[in-house]
Image (cartoon, rainbow, N blue to C red; front, side, top):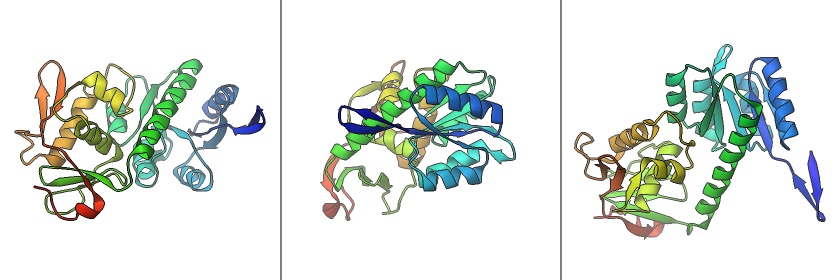
Length: 258
């Protein structure tokens, strides 16, 4: 569906609703279409991957309990091939699933039973953050990289090269967090600020989501994760990146920075 607005055609954003219960799929379709979105439905992992390949999907709502398919595994598979925003749909008491969902790359979560207005509000919030993040990425000079402690972060391709010249294999979420630190060295950042700057989920009871992500990132970049020298904990406040950060171009970054 498209709208005609002051002489130009404005196409609705398409939401992929992944849910094996036809009744819930129908409910979400009606709610989202009423909110001005187009909707594509999927009930299995194969249908999801086909939809992402064949259509322009703006966001995915993904039920963790997906019949014979595992929603968390599916989220991992999506993240391997697409940066599309993902909102996980979980049970009321599935705290562990929520944490794991965020760790595998989900952008937010909704618990069942949910209010239809909350669904639309959270989708719009994630889409806004995604658009802002994309704009910021586009504004970065092509080929720009940041070097620190003999490691190089290539911003344009979201790749971190370690001290041996190998790809660290960071997830998109971990790389966003690293970029936030590298662009603000020596600055104390609260957990709330890190949530906002990484385009993460809105403030919620899972206060340790950022702490867990910092711990994972330390394992990839610290020489001794048990005694971190780069990402310092500021007790009672948040974190600070203590490394010396330099801007380099890809043509200059083939050799390791001192």
